[in-house]
Length: 339
Ligand code: NAD
Ligand code: TDX
Image 1: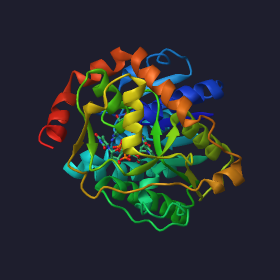
Image 2: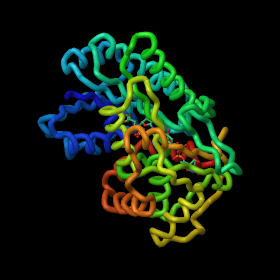
Image 3: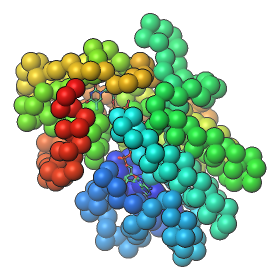
């Protein structure tokens, strides 16, 4: 099987490539990535020379380039991880989110229609369901929960999901969608909560918690997400959406404190800053469908996953030091200096 993984130089796509090459060494894996600020070739350095792996620097919105690649490689499966993925950046400047997340997804699906495909899998997010109230722990997102977005990021991802389902109904494209909760693990770009807090704490820098830190996220170790996607692509039903989540809800402040203690730092580093605009209160996934239909269950407990993640950032300092030495500093200033 030949598989195109878009966005494979990013966090989840990169972890997926490692997972796939190990689980299915007979497959040919092509990574298509534009290498935006969030894409890092160093993430893929260990597989760059594999004979069944190829990296192609390409924008998913570049129709000619995408068609050329499909003609060359004749992929059986496309898994679309490529996206602008950070909510705060989408609040600052939505337009690139609309371009990549919506137009890019449609270009990929047009290529799938033109050249034929066994499966187009869209990596979606639980943020398309909006948020749940903090005082109703009995409520969860199911696949039937209405789409109700809060940020330009989640709106662009919801638009992409709608297009994916429309391509299925209108053109019969064999699609599946997964909607996952917050991921954590190795290679996550340090603009996101967990790596940002680990790296700031290591530098004894303030830990900027939005609002009062009471917002709740449902955390899943990235490898469990990769396993879910692989299962959906192989055994999932065409035209279906599968929610993926770990039943592991935590308040932001508790995650930050856990990192502070794990690194033997002081709680005094915690700094409560102006809240994110439109900040979603709580995400919580009901993963009953993927469990019953495909037998998926998360395997990594949060206490183990967070230990592994912190250890990875301690052992792989050159990976993130290179990132935070560049454009990241300007981003950090813009986002946090006067907050
Ligand atoms: P990321 O920001 O770490 O990586 C995104 C990758 O896509 C980068 O390598 C980047 O270079 C590439 N990319 C961006 N625009 C591109 C374009 N126009 N053409 C080609 N490549 C492009 O993101 P991530 O956290 O790994 O998220 C991957 C996917 O999973 C996204 O679709 C995201 O919406 C979804 N998702 C993420 C989470 C999470 O917790 N991180 C949870 C649920 C769903
Ligand atoms: O400095 C920070 N301080 C803070 O309090 C940052 C970066 C975040 N936060 C809060 C905001 C959120 O409540 O932490 C929580 C997690 O924030 P992010 O890491 O930015 O993730 P989130 O906004 O929840 O979105 C993530 O999960 C769903 C991914 O970035 C999305 O791509 C995915 O779709």
